[in-house]
Length: 132
Image (cartoon, rainbow, N blue to C red; front, side, top):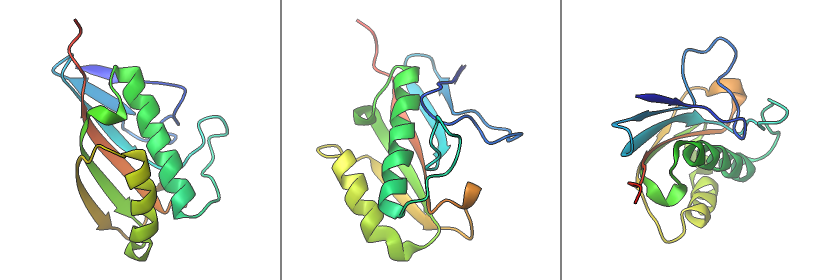
């Protein structure tokens, strides 16, 4: 098992007991912790609508996957947590653009609240392609 860490995505919230991602069965699978729209440089949640927050959350996922040796086109499953399912259509439009040509399995849930007051949080499971 390997902890994946990159400065191109936000670090876990202060004192929070989770990693950005864990690669298990080295060279095969990586589980990315839920990502919200925290700018990795400022460490602050972007003040944007669900479209902007979805795009940044997925950019954070992509940065973590890259650090693990994977990529968005290797994602096999995502889970999307939303503060309000009324925003599903807007989130889904951005999600579809980013995952164009590749549709991983997905579940979406409305939750009472998300970290840092985010509107959307996205976690992912991806394959790390074998080298060679």
